[in-house]
Length: 279
Image 1: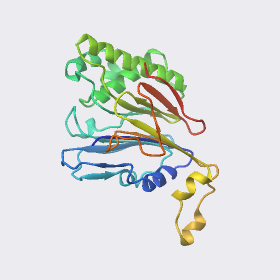
Image 2 (image 1 turned 90 degrees about the vertical axis):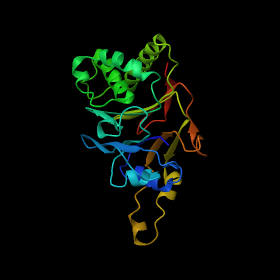
Image 3 (image 1 turned 30 degrees about the horizontal axis):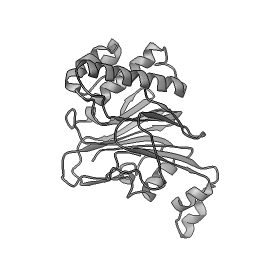
């Protein structure tokens, strides 16, 4: 009953249209009624915004409802089971730092023994930025520390290959610390975004993505009848990538492309997805 979804598009209305069209695929169910929460992080102009609900009693969460009042061409959505840290806003993904967004599913193996080491490895100013208790927030700040070491934390534009290198270093250090504590490699899925691109990491539950481009792919999303049909935009230039993991049935939906294990996928508004190894 966790879920991780990311969108990047070249129009701010396409994410909502797809979420409504694929409501069933992107809906998360909680048949046991266990506590859960959710959050959405998104970019609007120069702002990085968060919409978070740390505790939700509904048995079904539709992504289209979660982002109904969001208009953005790049967003990350997360449904949280709360395996580490209480149900409060500071522990609710996504996490934000300057122009970066981060969310995670899965749990760092042995985080109870590792969190002090992870925290102590951060520079003081990043330690002061940690607000909650989750392994995800600590892992995000470890990534930020590698950007800082490379002189890129203050950069408004960080090339995707440098962000991927910082992610690989983050995961490698986490796994090395875990091995030193006698722990197995952690099974995690991550989404990381800045204003220019979206990175997806799979080393846990199945993850897949879908690309839509041009009129043939988008006409089904704009199927209104009557006067609203006249407001349909020119669909030929439209482009959207959606990536998601932790599906209710554990399977990548039909028509989606499965992400290989131990992979980082780079999504932009203009290019085809590129895949590199996460380790």
